[in-house]
Length: 379
Image (cartoon, rainbow, N blue to C red; front, side, top):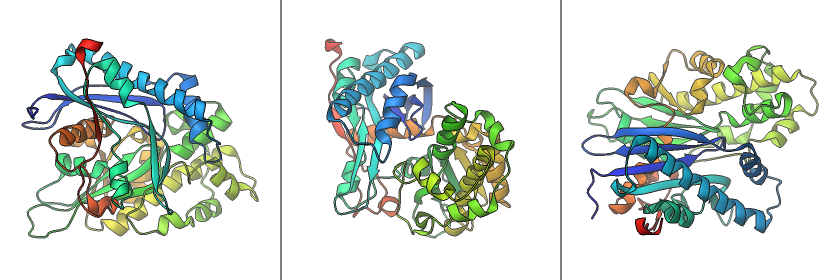
């Protein structure tokens, strides 16, 4: 059995598909990030990922297979680069947890599925490190959503003894974790779900009209005005009223969805961007108010924390709650998600469950992930 104090790597590229977030962490006696870095995709690789992730995309099997391999190579390179920067030999790493790159998530319907690319065989071969991957599908097989998986780590990292709090992840999609007060005699479970879009629509609209990957610092949105009728129409999306457990992705919240609401409207593109900021803020705030009325602190993480316009809109919508980032709790908001997959890899090797059935809706706790053994002599 692996010693719990050993090092673990965690890697993920989220819904925004902009970079591979990479973390080296220890978990005993406390969770500690030893080193972390984000490795951006090259423009061509990102374009291919986003093209494949489009709902209307017809998957070419050759493209699917080659992209799986190339993403595996990119993830392996990120892992090796981080270890080199940290001055850590690969032999010191117990295991690597790779979430991969989600290109489709379909938890509903008669045959639920989720698809992440980044071949773990390639990662294990190129790093020599035992790799744990395919974290979501066992939860799906047990009747769950396969997402979100972060709440289990949020509970381990951020639960407070005296007060309830919410952890908000602002990736391409926003999700919340509701952490009940500890030691109060109540047996309230940790809860969590995807609330809707965070950055995915903002980034896609900026790419269409600015030719940029994102709206830097929210400046373009700040130049626009929120269109109240459009916002009201967007908030009528049935997903927002659906009760958890629930999860979503680009399959729903994409430019085709937005274009359908814009068909009969004439709006300046900057006004649409401002309205999309308001959509994220309102949908998050509504979810927090409904699911965690007693929580007065919300701690944000993920790429959205770097958008001051979005953060200001969230603070206004969440008031009187206080919005902070997880930096206030001692964890870099850019690397919470990657830390989760290092943590999940450790739990897989220890034979411990990684899901929370109250969050995903699975029929019970499940050990998540498949193991691909590494061989340092092969690299």
